[in-house]
Image 1 (spheres, each protein chain N blue to C red):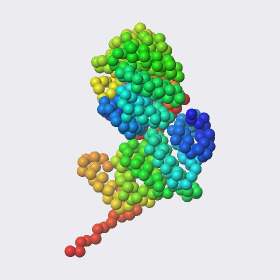
Image 2 (image 1 turned 45 degrees about the vertical axis):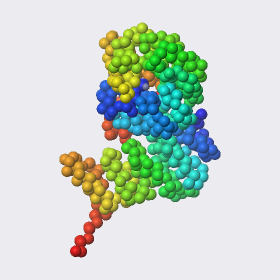
Image 3 (image 1 turned 135 degrees about the vertical axis):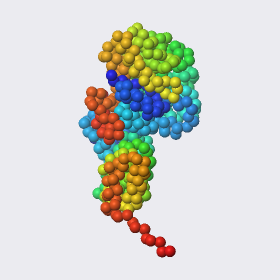
Image 4 (image 1 turned 90 degrees about the vertical axis):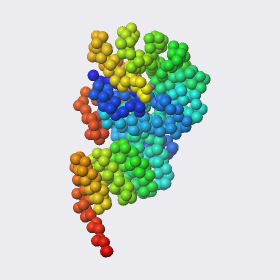
Length: 289
Length: 199
Ligand SMILES: [Zn+2]
């Protein structure tokens, strides 16, 4: 079983997690840039964070046999702080980098005019850089926020198929399914979504454009939730191929729109540990280009 | 936005050096589509930069500071070519701050790229010995250190000897690479025998 976790904040996780993830079959991740809990107050701290998502974190992941990619963007919470707006000016530099597979995560927090402006500007940047966009839905006022998100997307230059709308639940999945955008589900130990509800949603809406992630971060979360969903799917009668589709091929298809995925050859025998660092050949550069 | 081919990018950088930032970021993807090597494409872009050494080093420093890990590594790998004596204006030791930055990281890809022929030619003795020690500590194969036989000296032998003794005292294995460096440093330059005190 090979698993791609398309939304996980590895910066907040330990190397023990990388080890457990690899042992459970996780071979590739996407780490969206986001809020760090402690608000940032200057451009420099954003740049250091983005640099670590493109430098230290992929290095750390590679030592455990996991391919690491990032999405880069100004998150909606900090879009409301005038001191963070300068981030928009440096984004083009980051959106040109290898392994940046989308702009994100974008979307709404409190649905302010500032969030509107920053969201629309970044969808524009995504179109210019030929990148898809990862958009989350707000925690509060979720259905209205999801509708407003889809309106902004439909007014942008991006096709719905180039947008992944994340953190969906039973209330919000329907409008996104109709829009043609990809549907993302964050499976958490308590809130948002659990693996059994997830399987029920797959049963109702099918496997098309369906993407599952752990969204693990510095809060109460579990980096193996993708694996739990795979197990729940098998227990509910789905086939190995169905599991591979939802937990590998779907996220690969979405992020391959960037032309910048660097996936391991999941068929080949792999090198893990110190040796892998020096053997670049376990990664197929630009395989999806 | 990005050049369609590596050759287009090289021509643009030669006439408009400001374009190097975006070409350098996209170079590995463009090269992969052409079946070319990404590191070699990035080196060619740097060699295409017009201007005297000071100007070239300013651009290198900027590319390194704004680069992802692969771009930083490519800058480090290109330093010997940019310093080649047949260049009209070799960079000499002006790019050493980049090497020092890479040696402060814990990313073994960057440390490996930093201990090449450019460091062997320009890095001062103290920093160079610390770099060799870091190579041993981080498990980078020691054959990546350029000029090891020429630069290994008595002080390096002492440092690696202490490192080996510390490992042995802790009941840990002394890596074969440490023994290799030790043998090399001792054979090149026998340890300095301290003069007996006069009093
Ligand atoms: Zn997130």
